Amino acid sequence: MRRRLRFSGIVSPVFVLLSVSVFSVYAIAQDAQKSPKAQTYFTDPAISPDRSEIAFVSGGDIWTVPSTGGEARLLVSHPATESKPLYSPDGRRLAFMSTRTGNGDIYILNLDSGELKRLTFDDGNEQLDAWSADGKWIYFSSSSRDISGMNDIFRVNVEGGTPMQVSAERYVTEHFSAPSPDGNAIAFTGHGFGLSQWWRKGHSHIDESEIWVMKFGITPGYEQISEGGAKEVWPMWSNSGRSLYYVSDRNGAQNIWKQDVAKGSKAEPVTRFTDGRVLWPNISYDGRVIVFNRDFQIWKLDTDSGQANAVNISLRGASSGPATSHLRETGQSGIALSPDGKKVAFIAHGEVFAASATDGGDAVRVTNTTGEESQVSWSADSRRLVFISDRDGPTHVFLYDFATSTETRLTNGPDSDDTPRYSPDGKTIAYERAGREIRAFDVASKQERVVVRAQLERPPLGSERPFVWSPDSKWIAYLPVERTLFKNVYVVPAAGGEGRPVSFMANGGGNSVSWSPDGTYLLFDTGQRTETGQIARVDWRRRIGALRASPRVTLKSRRVPQGA
Image 1: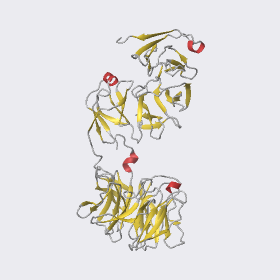
Image 2 (image 1 turned 120 degrees about the vertical axis):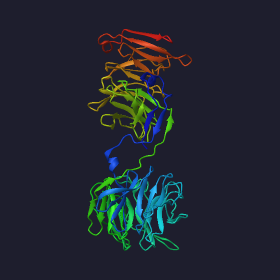
Image 3 (image 1 turned 180 degrees about the horizontal axis):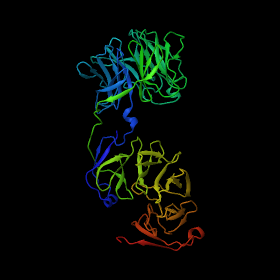
């Protein structure tokens, strides 16, 4: 869910720097970043019994379009997410899934009257699979009664009632069920993680699954139909009930295959795509047409000829849009004022937002991830932000460009990176790696290098200045932990080299260092464990080449009186 944050009033830049916790903002559940692809994707297609119409999902709502393509019209719209529409065999009702009541339940829409009825009420997510051929039952998959996320197959009467288990093998996942036309068996997918990880591309043993058939009776009989050793999912019966269609990546790319259910039969590919994905197929009740999702479009396959083509669709209708909720927020952190004084970036709910520092109003959401973002810092031209994110485990440095609305990952590797800082000239981004190095990333060449190796401490929350650039971008001052466990200011050339101390104090504090705007002095905090912390100043009056040629530099170190 994307959000905007609304500032409750005009914000002073000075006030932004001095006080973070007193902001009152409103979190609005509204998308701030819109990609063209996200507005035009089509998925979850279903063909009507007479093959004249296709129901599908776009933007979390259900639409219908003539099967020949053309103008699509909105059928079901709700702030929640609707998915997996399926026509009843008589074409008068439509079953679908919705998150409007939680994780996901199954609903039935009467297409004649518009009456909507909720069919399942479990706390878990019910995955809608199919209608029975006589239209009396809905088959679905659920993990509500198995262990460790394993799925069982259930069916429930379309008029309502208690769902009954159809196949419930313990410690085995069963999903994507399809009842046979004669009602005497079901085909389903056994093993693998296809129900929850259908989006995974490429071959992995954890995704391998097979097509099975269970014959009903006093003692149900199970028979493996497909060979296995591949991701084989979404079985669909032919009209005769003698063969099954399903999706397999046996030959690399995903395609629709056909196989007789008789023992010893061999599967044959029906489509022959060499790339792309084949997802969420649905077969007409007469077995003549299969519709499926490929490359965010709806495709239609003639099962007799094997010809498949994309269906041209244009949307006509207004989606209800995401729900709006107002939440009073006072817990922003990591606020950073842009160099031009016009914008402010901050962290809320682990995401990066940016807003006007003078006018208030809506704040644009910069990130939308499952990880936690932090440590925002502006470029000198106030057009870009750098920050860290732990979305893939270790923290790494990311860059967001407001001009292009694009995000770029700058660092990789198993170690954590933190505290990214743009140089004043905007050419380099410095950051810490694993508390052992200060590194520099060249923006133009996209190459990184080690500036200095030292024992560093990751900055505590709210104190994010363990190193700082000089105003001319030629030096970096930092606070390493010395062998004596003291923490003094060191300076190193930005191009790399040996770090030299410029303060010599027996202290144990030192979490933050700053350089004056004119480059003539440095400030850092200092203090012993039992002493009140103080600010120290180091005058920076270097002679030409002083640090390069000799450690003897004309420096003046003194404590700054409190209250000065």
